Image (cartoon, rainbow, N blue to C red):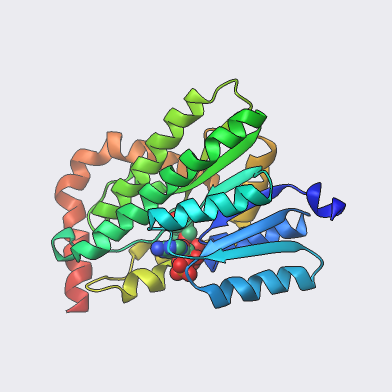
Length: 268
Ligand SMILES: NC(=O)c1ccc[n+]([C@@H]2O[C@H](COP(=O)([O-])OP(=O)(O)OC[C@H]3O[C@@H](n4cnc5c(N)ncnc54)[C@H](OP(=O)(O)O)[C@@H]3O)[C@@H](O)[C@H]2O)c1
């Protein structure tokens, strides 16, 4: 029991697959107590078992993070068991295609998962972290937040929200002992792309073919935990994408839509 008490505790949302599951395995190997959440309970149970069989410590609470009541229950349960050192707001999903063809229910859900849940969980945990003068909130963003391109209207806007929110928070928290960071990821090989394809009227996200392995994101996470910063790009060279919109936005206006049209025609 004493051993568990001394471990760093992290809550990871979207831990049933992809980046969240990889973070959980990685941090558990580093000796952290990992708390997992997502909707697919059987996946969380299997991952939690796997971590425990390898001598790590994991717990899970399954639920739909788009629901405010679940978020409140989750945070209350987690905080009642001990302080959180790190919150990783990772749950999220994408959709590719013309916004005019996106089901409103999917768009609304994207706002709830990618933005609202991230902000609400942060709001719920911050007073506890501030009282202890310690804590790190890590929000999983995307290079798409700075690339508001055709085909990703809602997704790009949702990640721009994550970026702006994290920057403001980082500045508000200066000197408090608590900090916030955004990880602006490029394409990573996960179920993200299958998920986007399977949704109604959703198409294949072109960036899929450039996906990097999740292990690279793990290494960036570890560096960020040891040396907190306002944001990091993964891979690092994607920091260049910050300049694409200011420098080439006027070119993308007429040319970008041609790419989307070609992609959508291929599917018809
Ligand atoms: N893969 C990429 O190329 C890439 C690039 C940039 C940024 N990102 C970001 O990275 C994060 C993780 O994505 P990923 O690539 O690991 O994709 P993934 O494998 O599809 O994982 C998404 C996770 O989010 C969870 N989730 C989705 N809706 C949820 C809901 N309503 N309630 C609770 N959990 C929910 C899913 O769990 P359940 O389905 O079990 O609920 C799953 O665990 C996302 O924020 C994504 O935007 C990904």
